[in-house]
Length: 115
Image 1: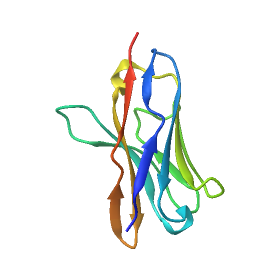
Image 2: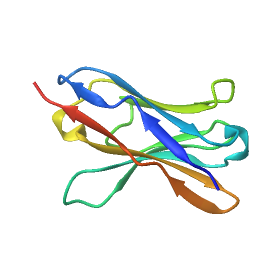
Image 3: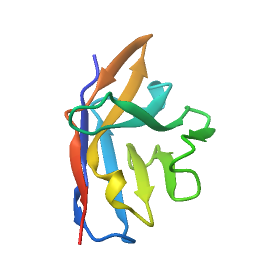
Image 4: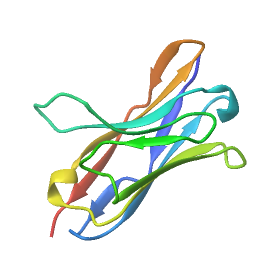
């Protein structure tokens, strides 16, 4: 099993930045695919970005150019750098990791973009 813990959420003004972190309970090098999702109350959870163990990344169109995902083996963390945030980015952000063909989720961290 793998436990995932997110951190870094909070309140930020429009145009601001936040960096989310996801810390796995195992060596991040053994977790193949990792990703960030987000969920707005009343809506389905949506994929934001993903990074594989080799470092290749992919982004949803609505964050491309604003968000950057990366995994750091030395820190044993995955990050989501979010720039130029807008109110519509407000959501609970979840970390997902795939280990031995099983998907694991963190508890989520709230991001609120508001003036």
